[in-house]
Length: 312
Image 1 (cartoon, one colour):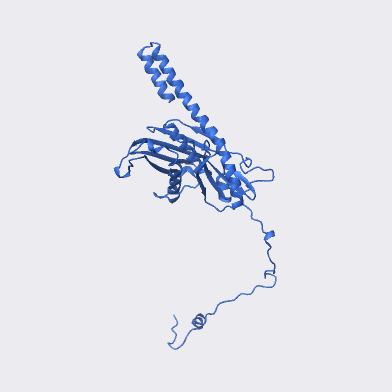
Image 2 (image 1 turned 60 degrees about the vertical axis):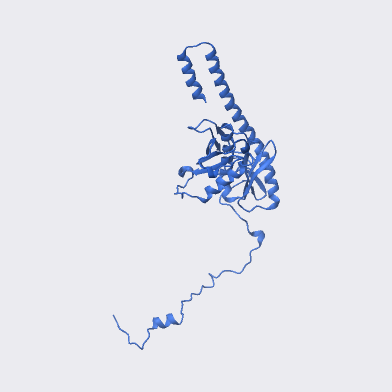
């Protein structure tokens, strides 16, 4: 290595001290041409075609058309009530335990029951499998929304010094997660025999330019401003309105009215599912009473008991 004398400074150090930088000059052909952008010439485009010229959405539905709803009220383990609701490709399983004695006296109330909501999002419910923390902020927010939605609906004054536990499991996600969980919770509470003031029907609505749409998918939720409305169809009262994105005030009233009307449609499907489930139970009970009154043998009674338990 070459050793420099102490009083001498290298040319590189001089350039560094003087703050010298290389300045590059673009040729005239590469220089940007002066022009101005007018707001009318700027068009905001989405990465997916939400609504085409024919009025159809990306999944083939119309603006106000809802996704297919599948309701299953089959019992799950030792739960007092359970329901599995599927909105399109979004599926949630809700199990209800209670009313039962509270585990901790410090959490009991002498005049009403305490509602506990726990939510769990399974890793395979989304396209990307990422490890979630034990305390997920988004999951806690959804659980708090569900609890605040049903606290004024459940007649907790009938069960003092007790608790009602609601466990929500998200099996699959494709938009409308909150509405699916709320509708499944309503059916699970009804299956458990817990008295409610009314059904709670939730739906998601959004707006594309000036066209309102209902029951959004995940792609639509990522690109459109949307809100979720939970309505009680019989009393026409609103238990929840959540808006997580910006929405113009002129469009809010239109989407809100459409969501309330869609809640009436969902209420018919939920009421039909509960009625069919109760008809099945009543028919099974009637068959068991008929067999018992006809004087059949004990072996036949045991077989019928197994059939009744299976149908329940």
